[in-house]
Amino acid sequence: MPPINKRTPALNAEEVLLKAEEMAFKAEEMALKAEEMAYKAERMALRAEEMATRAEEMTLRVLLLEIKLNNTKTND
Picture 1 (spheres, rainbow, N blue to C red):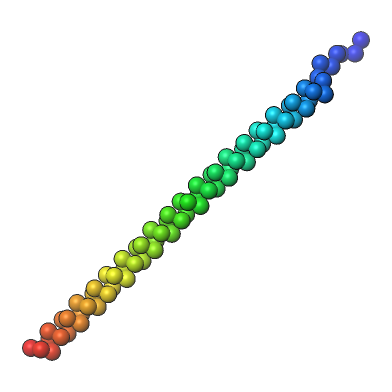
Picture 2: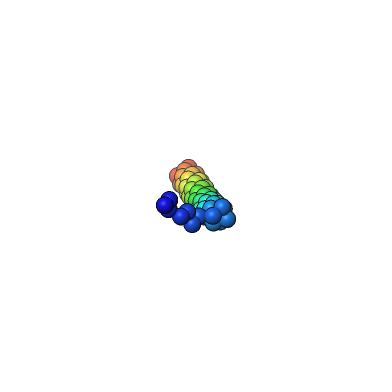
């Protein structure tokens, strides 16, 4: 006697639907992770820009001090 197949088309369809939902959930998870990574990259870029601005400010301060020093020397 052949084995009885207890799998019905409805059960198979339900399994397929559950697998599709699982895949959709994983895709959403990956999208959120990508969004988080993009946010972190943007934050890093902003920090780098801030550091470049600070370095530029410091360079300008040094130049200003050099000008003041030169003016002091010429006034003596």
